[in-house]
Amino acid sequence: MTRIFNDPADFADEALAGFCDAHSDLVRQVEGGAVRRNRPATPKVAVITGGGSGHYPAFAGIIGPGFADGAVVGNIFTSPSAQQAYSVAKAANSGAGVVFTYGNYAGDVMNFGMASERLNAEGIATQNVLVTDDIASASLEEIEKRRGIAGDFVVFKVMGAAAEAGLDLDSVVRLGRKANELTRTIGTAFSGCTFPGAEQPLFRLPEGQMGLGLGIHGEPGLFDTELPSAVELGRELVRRVLAETPSAPTSGRLAVILNGLGSTKHEELFVLWRTVAPLLREAGYTLVMPEVGELVTSLDMAGASLTLTWLDDELEQYWTAPALTPAYRRGAVGFEVATAGADEAELDATAAADYSSTEASRDYARQCLKALDTTAALLRVSEAMLGDMDAIAGDGDHGRGMVRGSAAALHAAAAASDRGAGAGSLLAAAGDAWADKAGGTSGVLWGAGLRAFGERLGDTETPTPAVLAESVRAFADRIANLGKAEIGDKTMMDALLPFASSLEDRVAAGTQAEQAWAAAAADATGAAASTAGLRPLKGRARPLAEKSIGTPDPGATSLAMVFAAVGPHFTAIPVPAAATN
Image 1 (cartoon, rainbow, N blue to C red):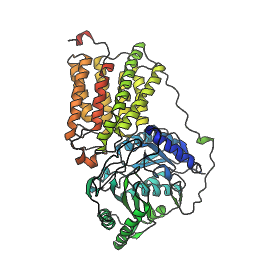
Image 2 (cartoon, helix red, strand yellow):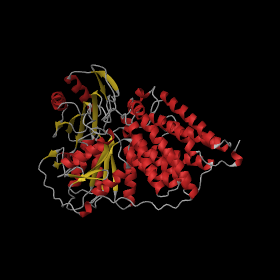
Image 3 (tube, rainbow, N blue to C red):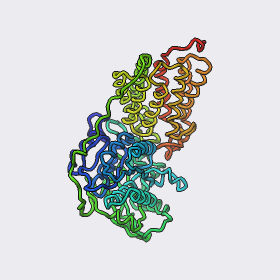
Image 4 (spheres, one colour):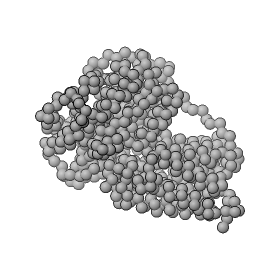
């Protein structure tokens, strides 16, 4: 249980600040995360890791010579925003390009992808390397859908050492992808982790049971089984990973990580290693600089994972290379660095927008601000319910992410309103803030959707009911294009698409805006409830699809709740006489 905290909402930020102060000889805090204290003496590829908090020493703990140049740090188990990734990359870039590397989670893919587009547009060559080592999360036939867990560490280490050796961006990316292709992990959990301030863990296991195939975001195992002896567990882990031995020719040498998830004692891991190591050697492998300890954790989860990387000569060179970081040190590091200079200053805050809006749009912007205030208040009181719903087959962070996002959106919208923003600019500012502070998949989707809503509304007039319906459709289309989900995938789209279609149909039929919105919200609420019978085909709940059956999708539920609540504000608009029944 996480016992040391102040305001639980500030836990990740305070942990990062404390970490950067404690290790100020090696790292410094920047907007969105941390980077090396000293810049390289000559330009080198900047390897940027990242993801949610709660996994220490991943990701900030491995910043330093021979490893990462920076880490983007999101909230607990939540993807950092595109703005955070962009800011860290700008601070770490030394002129030879940037590579983002992270686990294959939808929110991370979206946010790091958007940051990459922005950096490339500015002339900073940027690429992405995804880690997909978890053999339990998808079959070999769908290996691209696998999530990244403790195999992150090997991929990051190879890339960091390659960049330190002076390889160019394409070579670093090639090595990272090769390491990922040759890495496999299986994990098991003995008990769930507990968020700061939470009274219960994200999941519980029956006495004498363990969950095999866990995730590192607090997800339970894919199935529960009797807790075996250490020997039996070691045999099972080795059997499952060796069953996926890559077909590519390698040297018969393995990088091995026996990883603790947060509450498993090193002594327990050593007992397990006593079985794992001989089995691997009996299978004909030489173990190269194995690691036994906590490298990729999940807050206070009790559990362990086994990672194997089949090495060739090239990968072994970088796996065994020296490194000097706060949490991981190997060999003698003698890398040349430059002293910190004025060019390492934090990025300046962007200037306030120069709005050009009509009085009518500014009046409607005040209605939009009320809608955002209602949203933030509703989500605050619904946080625990949404979190519990998400914890059934996900990581339990949906409620907290929605609270953070809506609060940030309200704050940004209020500031925009004070500066005279019209409705479109106000909602666009709210969307950007939601995506930046909420993180995760739902954060980037809600943020992008709100921006699209605002772009369609514009800043010149009060919308007609038809324009309002078109703005909702723009919201839905932007989210659909980003998330690639459809009705039936058990996502927020199961409520959003019925809402958009229902609103369009009723407005086209001449129904007054308020009545049309209320009826569409009722349709969305019913559609959200119906997701209880679906198996998730997208997102973090997909690997635990069977456990999700019987529980409505939290994203669809929260969207239906919000849209039902904000109707009176968005529909407080004049209705043309021809549209009155």
